[in-house]
Image 1 (cartoon, one colour):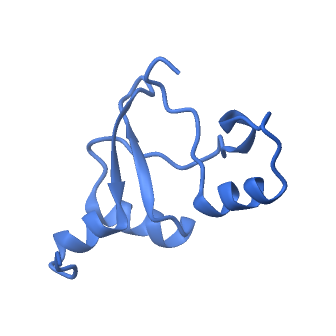
Image 2 (spheres, rainbow, N blue to C red; image 1 turned 120 degrees about the horizontal axis):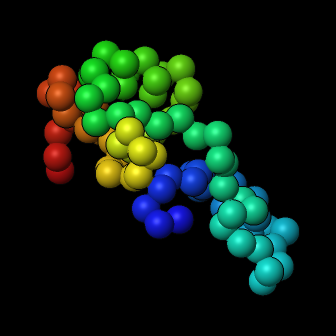
Length: 87
């Protein structure tokens, strides 16, 4: 909270939670607090490596204090290689 990255919630986690849901479910009980993050100066090569090895489609970008400053996606990486065309 207060701008700090606390975790991520994957779509599949949300679907599973909805299947066995009660109205008392909270995001903090569903999210993954061990999500990988990157710094603003992370290299493209490192982003590619993390996306491939972690099997994620996006990585939160945090500053040195852990404040969330952005999000980089697999599509962002593909665009850097001209491998993704906007429709």
